[in-house]
Length: 134
Image (cartoon, rainbow, N blue to C red; front, side, top):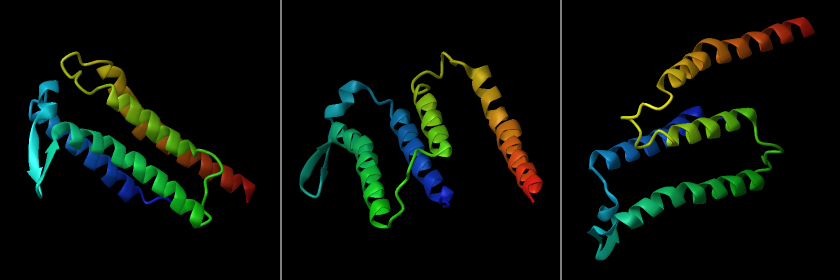
């Protein structure tokens, strides 16, 4: 089974870009009630925000249903999915904390570890294991 990593990347980038743009406005809780007329309906900032986190939840369930209908259910949560969820959770904890620079050195070491150790180590171990099995 393969993954469309470009689609996953585009989804995460869309969320990150939107969050960055929201923060760049100087968003404050008092802004939640600001509204915009969209085709004759008043839509508040709060409405947009709620939609921005519930839409991916809704899409997640659509993905699950579509996979089921296609006979492509997941029998377990793949390790790569767990990596993605854990990194998203850690990244979410950085929202609004730039001045404090929480765990910055450890985050940089983790990023380097992914690039320099985890991915190449996994690739090399799998290749060696497959070569030994031949």
